Image 1 (cartoon, rainbow, N blue to C red):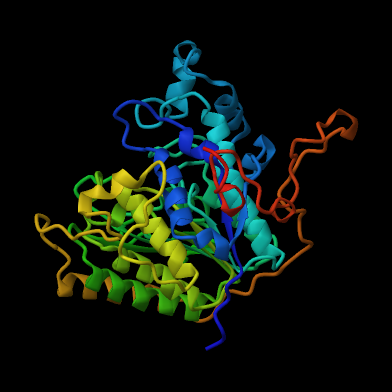
Image 2 (image 1 turned 180 degrees about the vertical axis):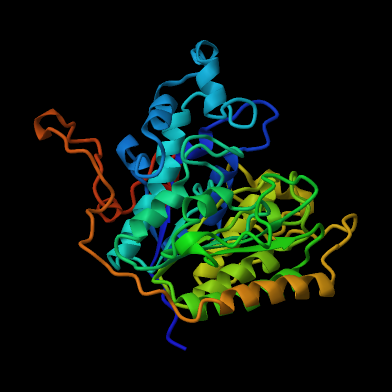
Length: 430
């Protein structure tokens, strides 16, 4: 096996962690700040190239999303939403996908990180790009869905398709990656593979075993529907079997891996029983293929476990082993008192594992039969490469020389804010 690639880019902006969906809403962007500070506490940032993502532009979002939808998101505010009830309903905005202060800026940031990561992979500047603020896989072309507004994953994949004939998308969030599957359902240039809870009206209600794509994309949508109580052993076995076959058959030029942490045990909205090791084994397995890899976050509604998970997987991508004892650090250390300040997620004993060996074998057999219908990787003709991430041009005479405007992520290495203490400013008075 070829030596493991280790040029890793990591994207973070403190502003994503200050976004607030509202009181009692399960989505807490605050978990992103917790993850980042836990990464710092283990000194993992010293092993990566750390970037602040630029804010993506509406014109980039409109490469997938409808222009009227993007425009509405850019204009709507909590103070004006009562005047736009018809459009709110049309775009599925409201209870699950509320309008909050700074919403569109939040979208710009998490989307910018995924697009920037894709650009770096395209140009060989990084082998792996990490954007834990991304992974909002439910957003559709003209509507919000499942706490997701702009689908950064689709936009990143479109960016990767400029340089790669085939891109593979993998989703280990407990919820089906419906927005990404829907976007590429009719093409063979993107294969989507989703491992998710299915049945009993579980959101979003899609992702049946029989849903395999259509037209040129037939058999390029792969769904692995799972049941309550999924544990490490079962998940690890079916993931590795399916993904080995997918990699052998599809031979992608780049991989996007959505690591939703709501598939962990004891998640507020989940019903699986995975530990950190069971979840991270998927990340480690895909890293072994040495294919350009974009890794994002996604769901995850028990904040301390989300931070543990994505820090643990950052370490896995770095081939680092973390101490079980979480290092003391500012701001968020007390959040980890739930299991004695340990880097672990305990399986629960109150969820029965309904994924019998027979059930998993039947699912695996059907998936393998579908994949055998693809005898070899599709031959995709490549044409002239479009320009990277469409950035509007600016009048240089009107620019503030102290502010950043667009450009490749590689032009903004180690940029940080006052509350993102990296190595260079740890000793400053706080």
